[in-house]
Image 1: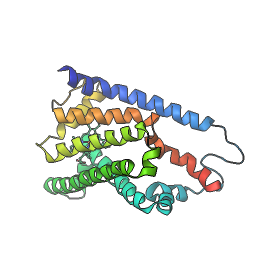
Image 2: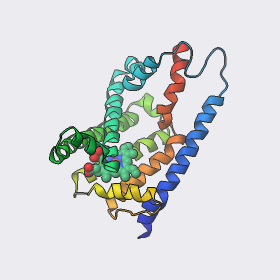
Image 3: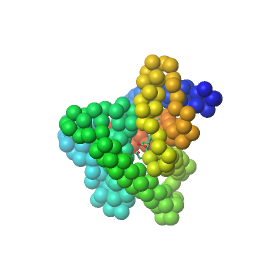
Image 4: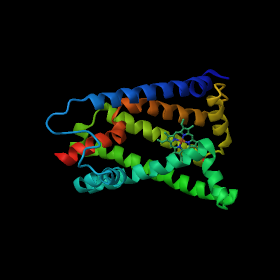
Length: 233
Ligand code: HEM
């Protein structure tokens, strides 16, 4: 196995899992231990509703009230990201195919549906990701508060989405190779696909996963803490 494939497909996945889990544990511990002045409290507060937090998580109503243009880019970006996440459960496990076949869908129809949904989601995601980047670069008040980590996270996401789209629309990549790889990792005997694009896509993706606990991308976890504080103030 060549060195790049071994590093990306055989070593980095284990490192990613360890750094992610330890990093998340560290961040949640820090949030739980943060001093709380006054009567502020952390989720779940007595007067917070699970429905309210769920609505904020799914539809971003606070952002909608504050900035409707940003809300539209951000919501479409996150919704398509969720769709792509679902698609990756199929890429990794084939579970989605088994469920759809059990309800009577043919393999051909599943392929067409996946190609359409994955293709559209990939293109929309790239478009909204680029719009979010252009917004940071062109609107002065946004540029003034943007720092290197903000650009790094967006550029990393765009690189992952771009390489994913190239795999989707470029030369055929047999998804079974990803499943073999995932199973081999669980058996601690890595069998790594030798596809350059796959390795670059996976490398960027794992760098993103490692970066999550130490970055603003973790806002998806913070919402369960901050929403209650916001609602009570
Ligand atoms: C180690 C982790 C990952 C692996 C092994 C992986 C693998 C793949 C594969 C094999 C494809 C091609 C699917 C096809 O042709 O049907 C793909 C597509 C794609 N990936 Fe990933 N991926 C990973 C993580 C991510 C992450 C974290 C993101 C986004 C933040 C992402 C975004 C995309 C997009 C946008 C596409 C194109 C649209 C689609 O096919 O769904 N991937 N990925």
